[in-house]
Image 1: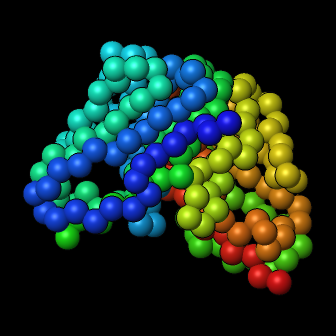
Image 2: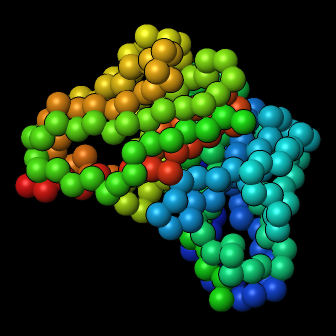
Length: 113
Length: 109
């Protein structure tokens, strides 16, 4: 099983550029999440989705956008990249809200210069 | 909202030493509790979980017991190995999960 696949693994952006971080899962999970992990810090939730067509903001949504047109895919869009968005981004998915584990992708390391 | 506080590291132990990483949570109701592990350059993997009070989660020699009275879920291992070196995250809640800041463990031979 592929699980949760994130692309790209690494990316360097210039200030003001835009990009989309891709996330796909093949486990038919309803719930998907985007977290960012800053150096030495825990994970902060950016956005999450409880099903196709439904998204909601997390703790740190500013500067990001998401869409969920299919169950499998949950891309994260960065508009007008800023140095403060330098981080490692993790996508995760889970089958349901309660009791079940979240499966994580390998992460995307983004540097904004 | 829900929050998780865990012992901040780094923690350095000799091989075969006893490990405890403290974790407490603040939440409405009684959320499921999890410990995740992150090896260098990788994503997070579930280590163990507990879904109700007094449940004990265990995996790979690690254990944690859901203590409702102290709102805690401390991670323990009786004898750590070099291969246990990683960052450990406590998490609580349903959707979405709330994570602690992580505790970096280094085990030296």
